[in-house]
Amino acid sequence: MPVERTLILIKPDALQRGFAAEILARFERKGLRIVGMKLMKPTAETAGAHYAEHKERPFFPSLIEFVTSSPLIALALEGDSAISVARTLIGPTDGRAAAPGTIRGDFALSKANNLVHGSDSAAAAERELKIWFPEGLITWTRADTVWAEPV
Ligand code: IDP
Ligand code: MG
Image (cartoon, rainbow, N blue to C red; front, side):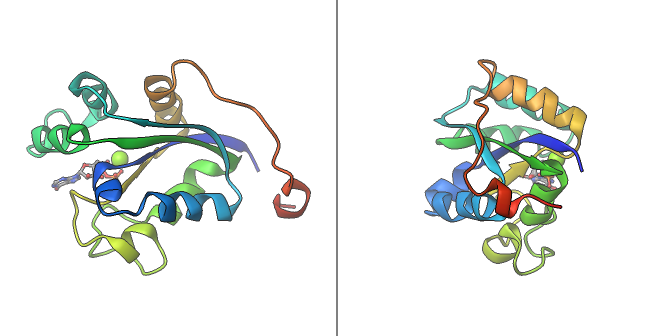
């Protein structure tokens, strides 16, 4: 059971729709530790580096326009299997196909404006955390660890 760190973005549509606290709460209640968090309006350069794997896709320009259009919250979360656990909480890319109970399943009807990003692998998490948190993260222990950590 590896302790992992993952990069989450609470995207501009989530803030515009007033869901930032709701989305943060879902990760927090699951037991993931917040080890980095900031409100920011990224440059196209930062957004482009983050989404570099999609550079050749037809939706790339609109994706960069979307994530730089108004503030987002960059979040670093830590916990057991944090990368896959966060992706499960988020749900699949297209909100219409996402199961109820997932963030996208509960709040999104779109494949583009789907509220949240989560790293999809250990390599992606490492790369993305460096982009959004070059200053590093904060290590701490949650008081409920002894009760909520997996056995
Ligand atoms: P993911 O966020 O579920 O990992 P990816 O396929 O990595 O999904 O796509 C990155 C982001 O690009 C999506 O979250 C969404 O905002 C946007 N996106 C993906 N596919 C499309 C599309 O077909 N049209 C418009 N936007 C898309
Ligand atoms: Mg992705």
